[in-house]
Image (cartoon, rainbow, N blue to C red; front, top):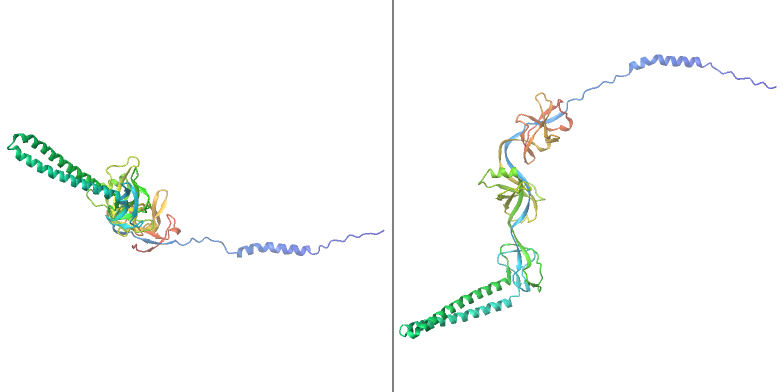
Length: 381
């Protein structure tokens, strides 16, 4: 019989391990006492640039959007019937008043005018003969009572001949006018659009046929609307020349100067706006009819206005704001009312005083009520 002897577990190492663990436990307070403590260090106050507002006179403006339109623009039409014989201009060209643009089959109308001249010559001859007959019978009537009736008849013939002369003269005048319609000329200096008909085409049949359009571009008009309140500001200065400036879609700094030459007598009840029109020199033809442009109308001069850099103006739910530093160098938020923009500077109408220190740089690192370290700078144009 086989006997299996169980191996006894060796426990001789446990006393040593227990002593090691006990030593570590006793050392923990000592190790904890050697660790550095975590402390909060308050960051230094933010540094900001501050400046007192720049004080200077500022021109005030009324701003609007408008559309350019030609001061004169007419459709050129065929006023007589005939075949178009010639087009004597280049599409889009500038032409002078009286330049020939279209020629409409003039021969038939020249013939009519010539016939009217012949009729006038015949009427003049009859009138001259009537005068002589009347003078002759008037002389005979002084001596022969039987010639009185004949004298009265010659008077009637003479007057009828004179009337025929007037009629023939009117017919010739009308024939000359009609013949003139065969030569379509420029009614004023301007630019002519592309022709709408071709040579050889029958025009003026039954109605006036549009041939092209001519427009005067110098000077040029701009039409725009302003609110009823802004219109009242302008009307409060009667007799003045309201100067305006215009800039096109790809322009800046309002390079075109002009003046308001018309203000509508009534306010549009549907929109509550007042229609205005300005006139501008356009010698370089930069502005064209149909262009939408930005407009500013000078309304006066604000003396000793306060200006700050436009980039330091902020927004919140209450409107436009700026940050200022108090006497204790604490950040304060001020609501402001803006005036006109002068280059890169913004005029402040209300909310900032001349002695205030406006934060012009570093606003991204400040909070209202906190202290900031100011660095004085100057506002310049």
